[in-house]
Length: 261
Image (cartoon, rainbow, N blue to C red; front, side):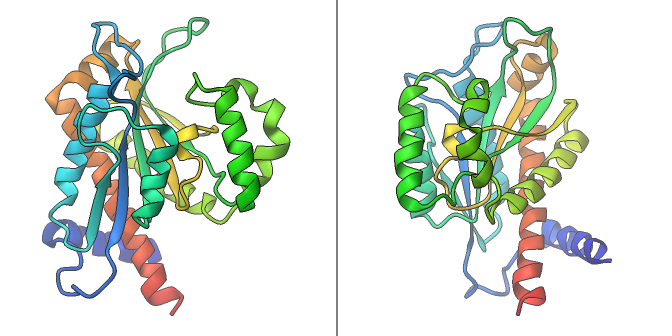
């Protein structure tokens, strides 16, 4: 019954815009992170397209969808082709008091894998380590793997550090948004869902809020690449992420304003 009510509210909000009658309420702050940029092109597609450009195009479209909501503040970690350090991206999110951090990327199959296609959603939750341990350990790890986006190949070596961190209070909120995003992407786009996953992406480390990384498709797959390069594909992905943010915010507002008052 609760989610039936939320869906009804969400439908009304999508038509009219959220929060227009309550200008005094604190704005819900969404951090949109376009992966890579500047000297860091990310992966390169079969046609030679750089991931960084597709990530930014999708993020800018998400932002344009969200701008009509006066009670939502949208912050971009980058709005042009520039290099932003990974640790600075989470620092931006924290300075802005973000309520949700969404990082947009494109994928590429590894050399030992068969061809892959579809989108993947990643959750990572390392933000509630003790402050001193958080800085020291994550910095040491990122220095050691400075040429990598993720710790996936070394997960077992650091399981004693990472597993306890994954139990913090933001994880279930990240999982909630991830589930909504998976459904919306599967509905709005032609891309196949590869499900919710967990990994230790550096860009998600240190952002004190729910954090999700979306691999929108595989640039090593001809059909995925063509879709991600197309205006239609980018619009569909952006619309799915935008709707996911709105639905998540409806749930967030419902709990804050009704359940826990």
